Length: 382
Image (cartoon, rainbow, N blue to C red; front, side, top):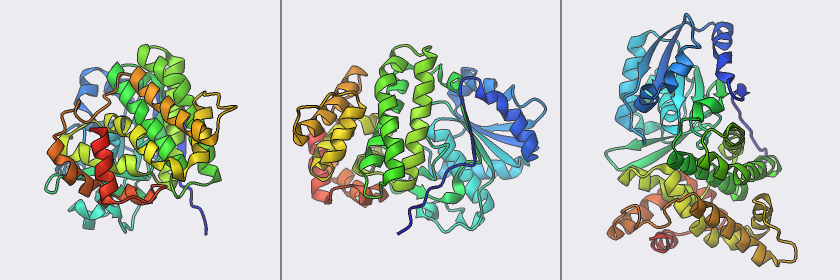
């Protein structure tokens, strides 16, 4: 069996990396940008930090999308893009902006998928999407380097996970200065999202040596830097290390898959608009405990990557130390610890379990799991 690894063709890293934008636009012969950006980023001046680097390139801005972007958001974006006369997309923001951009860019060049819902899973698109330049403003989703995006189907109340090598941005600019204005809560939640990517990508069924190398490094970087980045948003060393960590985690999980933390987090976002990073952070220790028998050796490596000295411990103790380290990090960051805290009604757990079991990420879980198991995990998290 062959292991496939797909990455975007070019990426820049470091504070001020956005200054490479103009040269790349000229080199690629682009003429007009369709900018997809969150309204708050426009209000707080983050978008202007990017547009001033366009110097001479015309652009239009599209900002009509939700934190959990919907089918309607993407359809509206496709219509706006087609009217704009733009020949490339600049995505500025977290996963919401970049995922919306991917949906727009794919459908613009593959209009037969204009219903959007047919993109769910592995869609048989024929053409590469409209070129996307992605500038992430959060250190979490790694959408700038992945072949995945998530869109909410409002009619069914489900998050659709779309997997398509044709959607990957041609260029990623990972500039920590664009992340400096992130509030503490968002820094913490997106950082825990990145940690969830790294841990699930490390233990998923599709993991192998190359992906393991990236995921362990991401776990190490996050463990060393997330507290500092959250406590002091102007700590640019911590910010840059988190920006790199989330990208490195994305390089791997995009190619090997995830697991049940994500499949359980997706319906929380779709049905209750819970921030994806918060949902992941809350569920991660619960699902890790369930998966421990299937990945005990790797859990010991996770503990070591998180700075835990497990010498003298049994494998079981080392594995538990990994779960405990994740719990402590989450607590230190003031992440909610129960579904009750985020106001999920207990009577909704059965429907959530049904949705989660059907999610594409469930198949990658290292330990076989049933809908009943997922329901019980939701109950434990409640």
